[in-house]
Length: 157
Image 1 (cartoon, rainbow, N blue to C red):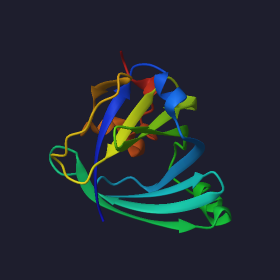
Image 2 (image 1 turned 180 degrees about the horizontal axis):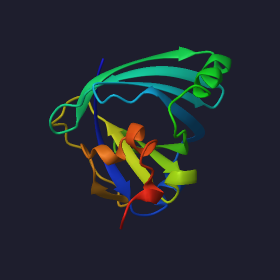
Image 3 (image 1 turned 135 degrees about the vertical axis):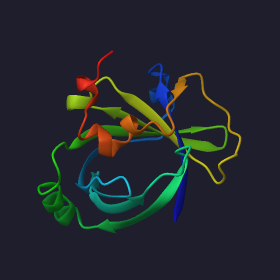
Image 4 (image 1 turned 90 degrees about the vertical axis):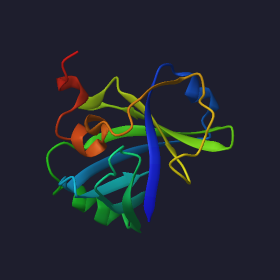
């Protein structure tokens, strides 16, 4: 139940031609305390409830528990979430024996595109595709729970 992942900005749309799936995601947070975030998500015709713990010092790993819930229940829970629902499309993009999840954000987070890769070990080596940009692992402002409160459009350049 420990999630190990790294996050990167994306510097081109080239990932779209390599994607094997594309799904709309809406998510909100019932709790955004950094020590235990509770997320509700709809993804296609499925609903999910996720609890995440605090990240380690470099931001690569943290506790994560997730369960599927009926779409109707997820939709009802979204209605009582904290301010700032996240709306995005997730592309799944395989590259050199790994799967990148690329999120293209909308509404208050429009123009932000972030790629994540889940790893088996914090020191796991992986190939980086050309469309992968600057690493932002551990930068809290890129966490979805923070984007719901301080969206990308409000950031100063």
